[in-house]
Image 1 (cartoon, rainbow over the protein chains, first blue to last red):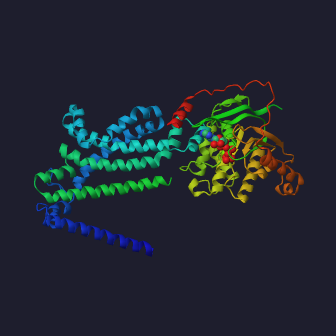
Image 2 (cartoon, protein in one colour):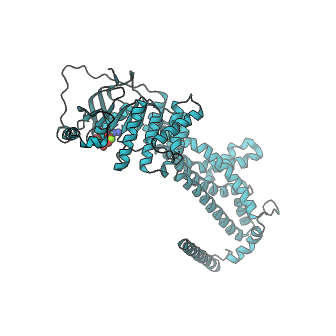
Image 3 (cartoon, protein in one colour):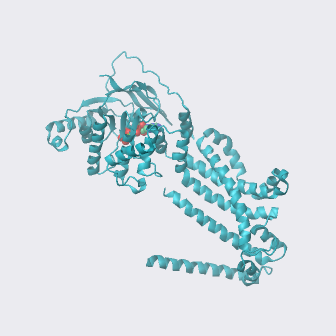
Length: 264
Length: 290
Ligand SMILES: Nc1ncnc2c1ncn2[C@@H]1O[C@H](COP(=O)(O)OP(=O)(O)OP(=O)(O)O)[C@@H](O)[C@H]1O
Ligand SMILES: [Mg+2]
């Protein structure tokens, strides 16, 4: 008990030191080389209305920060879900079938490093026929395709790593394919799948800014870009911090889910 | 009496980087219904290989295995396997692990009946109080008990046990040997146990099959265990015949296991057996290859 309390105090102190050092460096930068960079205090001033009223809606772009985050999270959630629904079965096929892996692994390897900025125009072209929805659909496509790869690859690795002993149990019992899949293979692969899911969520959140900047859809990403155009530079920093904190929280949440399945 | 399991001229060849390695060659064995056979031999001679071919988990290279009049080509619940490491599925409780098999074998029974079957076998092996725990929360011995319950609950024609008690302490081992004998006698099973332990072989088995050293291992000698059943461990330890038998087995392992018995001349060559590729097998094959 005492030890955990001390640990907590030490951790908090370390965090405070880190934050203070960063703020100091930032102040120094804006005082010396980057005169246009707002100081921490100036940043707080411009960001304040968005923080004190986090759910306010004053105009299309002028909204409380949590409302903006909510829009972004909504889009990310949809794209992420698509990534999981498409990526997990592909990962399973890659892991299960050597033939499938031979045919599609090179394609996966080529598509994986492509930047979201490159996918977005293609996404919009793909969904041109959906008219006003094209922007949103293109953004979803981009999030899904960029976020999919960690899920695909980790699932495939997990499937290949299923211990032969577990499969033998299924063979001795003559389990049907469906039972083999859902009673043995999926549970055995879950820890790997969750690692993939966590990495995928990180990427989905990473892509949101690019997607919103280019499509102009309301959210933290487009807020950042608009505030740059409005020369409210403080809000760029504020947006970056918000994006970072939200990404961090998402990652923590996924780690909790992941560790639950690790012990299973 | 006709044999229940007939293994004839069994060969197993593994492809290795240095070319094909014939681990088992011309392995012959006939087992009667209800018999308890122990298979002993030096580590790496191919005991597990033979067992997994009988289980249908490993392909037969050459020769044949006939169980109850049918060629063994694939795994199935008519052979209950107790693996060397219990390999329970860690995401299921002990009860669910047993139920997975029970559901497969007794698919016509009601849910309640199936639950009773699983609970019966779990309590016979002494897991009545722990059956709703996951393997991670069970001791090594408890997991092994669960593996035995799982194999027995299938009500298999034949039990195949690969060093089931190898990793247990002596007390647990003796207790589980008695559990095994008890179940075997009650359900009138045929059993084949692979073991390193000469005493265990003599306590459990009707016949002890001694394998020669690999590669190209085969049956070196078969020893008829002369002790009447039910056997009493204490009485056995006081019986000079037990020590003679023990000496005999150890002598084989220490001095004669490298001698391959000569095959009689003029026997026909072993028949080639190629198991048909069923859907599941192809599915698994793809998996293994991947
Ligand atoms: N998949 C494989 N590929 C190549 N060689 C194998 C393979 N499986 C087993 N072997 C070889 O076959 C021989 C027999 O193995 P097996 O596991 O049957 O021995 P064992 O008698 O059960 O030994 P132990 O008592 O140590 O369990 C060993 O020399 C092993 O190296
Ligand atoms: Mg072995």
